[in-house]
Length: 122
Image (tube, rainbow, N blue to C red; front, side, top):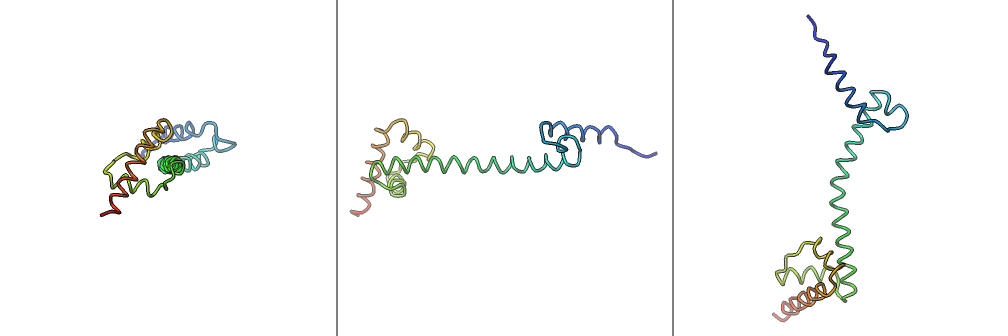
């Protein structure tokens, strides 16, 4: 007695074709091309989830850098000063402060400058 596996195969094909709805031309009609398209879409989605994190970090750094330039300090010197002053704020929060509370960001810049000056005098 042989096993045909019809139900399982049919369910798998149906699942792939369902995921390919809205794709152009044969990509949503034919199983083979639909499967290739869905696999590629999965790969792009996986990579996109990783890239999103990188993109946000770049955005936060750009915002902090712009705010630092307005305060007359470079981004790298500002981050170095925060490290010396033992201020542990992540870039997301620093970016928010720079955009919404310029006075608080100015206070952080002053603390960073003071920590750098203290380090230089040692």
